[in-house]
Length: 171
Image 1 (cartoon, rainbow, N blue to C red):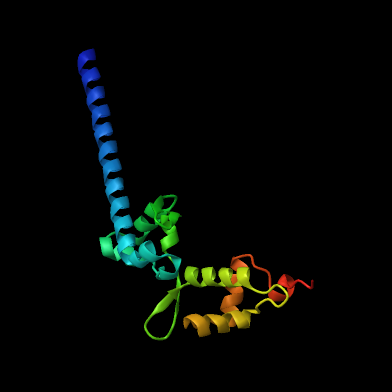
Image 2 (image 1 turned 30 degrees about the vertical axis):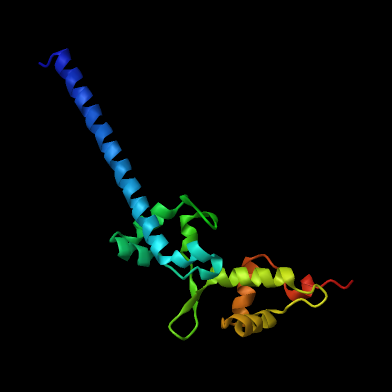
């Protein structure tokens, strides 16, 4: 039969091991967050230096392969984690964005296109607001971004911007 001193010692050793495991887990998590953030920074360097119009399409798989972890790890790490940048404070998930292929081996970030649509609508003549087709034409003409009218409509709806006939002011 063990005495009380031995039971106490075993209990304390068990708690110390649990504490060490917890500290090691926290340290590992911090390192992974750091590696993911550093990878995002490499992929989105132009965004951090110049702004939203330089945000590149990026998927979880790109970062996962870059730092040799599973995509689900990158997904978990970027959820509810924020980074303070020269452009503002963003959730790490923000930097993962789809893109629209421009047919020349380059894609344009959907967030960049949405931002451009928002800016166009904010500056438009309210007596003659842009239609989705006109927005697509202006994007192509002024920025060389080829996007379908239906895509403009989808992005406009996502931005909670009304269609041109509902934005029109008669006086």
